[in-house]
Length: 96
Image (cartoon, rainbow, N blue to C red):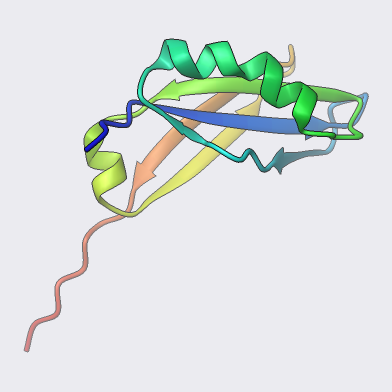
């Protein structure tokens, strides 16, 4: 079984960076951050995004994030940097 260690995210933004949205990628998970970063230029070209600016980032992921439900949160800074974070959702256990 492969160990997933990196997550890729592409975000397309308007020219003034006031509106940004996620761009789907065919393979968002990679075994290493280096492998993910190596694929970034190709995925940006293949995205076909008509956005003025396309931002991309790879984020190291702990194994726990992939073993439970998590939310991917991202922000774009004023200087055009894409930041990614993962928020693990608490496990719910049914009881009587």
